Amino acid sequence: GDGELELLGYALPDEPVAPGEVARLTLCWRAMRRPATAYTVFVHWLDGQGAYCGGQDNMPVMGQRPTDGWVPQEVVVDEWQIPLPADMPPGVYQIEVGMYDAKTGQRLPIYLDGVCQDQDRLLLPNGLTVP
Image (cartoon, rainbow, N blue to C red; front, side, top):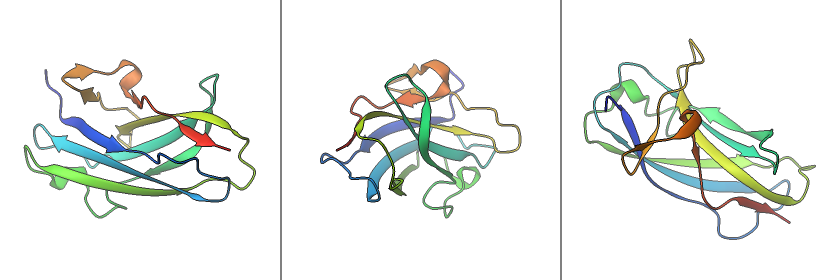
């Protein structure tokens, strides 16, 4: 395929993260070819109905590693620290991850294990538990 970026792996908090605390998340990307665009990464929390409940969007590695500077086969470790709102209701939230072009809002196809993901996003298998 003409995929540019693959999510090689990720690490999520094993423990529940209380409202007002910081959720730490690591994404491990690989450039399959050099991206022409500096994409914005999104990490969003979704409730049981799939509705957006918050999260964060920024360039990889806190803005320090724009994707248009990546070289083919380079692996970039992208660490996130996302504060949860103090009033976040308890529950298990799905986490969706992906990239988009901030100029157009167009999402980039995301591959995991060579499979293009539905809706150009990756739903991580383990959710975020808020007690």
